[in-house]
Amino acid sequence: MDPMAEWIAAHALRLWAFLLLLAVLAGDLAWQRNARWQHRALAGNQTRTVLRWQVGLILLLALTLLFLAIAAAVAGGRAGELARFDAGLAESLRAQLPLPVLRGIAAITHLGDLWWIAPAAVVVAAFLLLRRHWQLAGVWMVALLGIMPINGGLKALFRRVRPLHDHGFVVEPGWSFPSGHAFGSIVFYGMLAYVLLRLLPPRFHRAVIAAAVLLVGVVGLSRVLLQVHYFSDVVAGYAAGAAWLVLCIGAAEHLGKPATGVQS
Image (tube, rainbow, N blue to C red):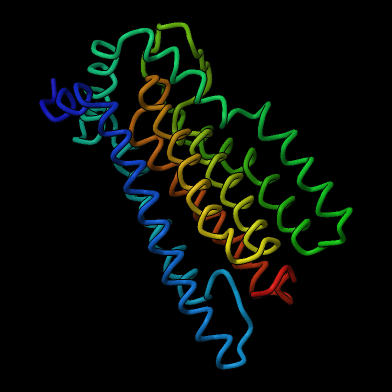
């Protein structure tokens, strides 16, 4: 068994907390840099945007390359180093995580379930339409409606079998790659954060970013701990979902007049 996988499994909960903290700090740093750029843009009488097109293009390219690299490794079969690490980590987590911990994680993972995301998405769309935020409503619906066909198409293409998960707290019968919960959560919570950044005063923006990053991290990593996905499934799901998110936000920002909200 992979020694690195065994070590990660032995410290899984601490590493989970550390990665979540690191992600929140990274999100906060990105927010601060973007806030400084927005102040400079306003001082120069430029339009305030959430995502600059140059940054969006770089992110889209980087995320696409990351997904393709992981997909190529996964398509290579069980002989590759990534596949061996994935299998070793799933087996080590199965052997080391106690059932009460898995039961708690299973409750958290439902934050990425379709039965929660779908009705919440309808409520947000209805709110935006009632408030006449037509552009935000349009990009919201396009982004959320794209989750199922994009992720489902990728799953059907790669047809990767899930790791064994016989604890009974969560049962997932479908294909494994890429993770639908990782893909869906980053699109749903990411788009929700974008909408709130457009509509709320700047004093709330920092909290919005932190909450979105935390929720996305909790959902995705819970799938690895529950052994319903391999580690690479979740990373690939994040990459593909983030690429779709960047594409949708970029379209909203640069193909039309930015939606108006409360200004600073």
